[in-house]
Length: 147
Image 1 (cartoon, one colour):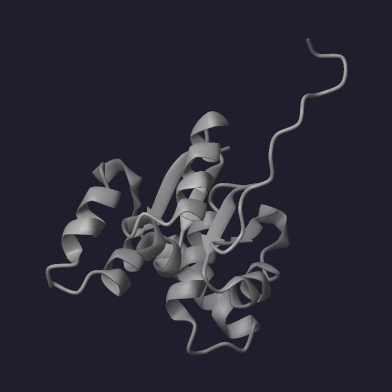
Image 2 (image 1 turned 90 degrees about the vertical axis):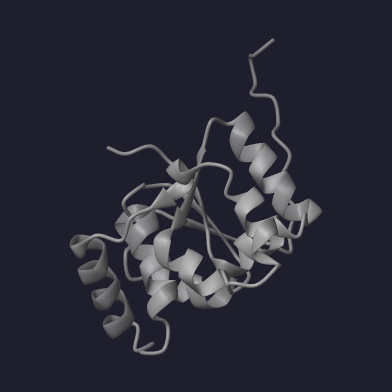
């Protein structure tokens, strides 16, 4: 089984590049919990413009290892999700969900939590957590019995 990830959609990547404190808090929290960052390749296409603002995006994507390939299997899974959800205009979002589903129990950080929650309901076995870039991550609490 693949490791859990913090998967960013286009809105989350844009917020990260802008230095948004809530998005940075999500990144910090995932680092604390040893959850790797993941950005589906189509999110890069949806976010980059070829203009001067891309410099911020380049800094946000500090390692090419964060980019997750869109394979044939991911494409097929995304097509199924998009078709079953009756959301024909949500191709990139469906790819984000299908990519995240490769990493069960992952967190999908998004600016469209309603859309991504709907799409993720079509792959419940992945147990994805859909979180809004407009919320702060919950604070960790000490477990009972730990010192």
